[in-house]
Image 1 (cartoon, rainbow, N blue to C red):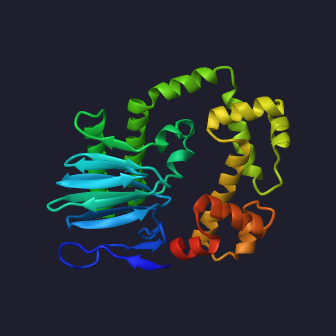
Image 2 (cartoon, rainbow, N blue to C red):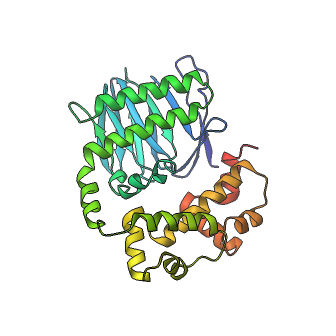
Image 3 (cartoon, helix red, strand yellow):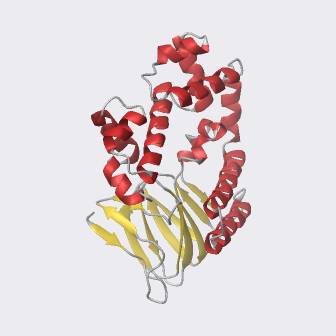
Length: 299
């Protein structure tokens, strides 16, 4: 890595955790057995343009924190919230007298929910909740609950923090994306939800094999065209995208929790070759399997 950036708290000691930055790509590190981190700071500072696979949520407690997200500027004042989706380049400046909580977490679990997947394109926007914005007070209450859980560190704290985040996204979906949900529901009214559920089970059981679109469409009892359209409508992904993400998910679990060699992980997760595995893994995670293991491995 080009450098390690460490934040200092008001006492001049290192906060829990650190950030790894390579050019503009940031590799977020998390406490052991978790994918969730919260930072508090009341020190004026500037963090240059960067991006990461984590969702970033800022809750300003006092003063103003200024963000630039893909060229657009946001001033987040006291009791306002900014939600930055993964992959968006952003920079921030903390002004004098400001304080904030910064939440970082991976979105994979959230987007595993089928209703969230159907709204995934809407969740790719930046949300700036201020003033009388719908759901702002409820979301701040959930963020405070997550802060309390995080610092108490009781058993299953990571899951409990994610429960707060899931409720936050449910509020965003209900208050801001309801029209999108209705349109998609109306467009998919004639499609068979049970068929899709059966196909997802089939993929989960056969992802290690050379599964093809034609094969799964035949299993579902529909034409290739109808199946493809229905599958995307219900899941938010093409069949190929969903299968690849399933395989990447299996691979990341093996990279984090086992010492299994990369070549064996490629085979066990259903990729035809190590070269294909490396290429697709880099496309999805923006780093190699070896780099991912070095950063997130827990064994």
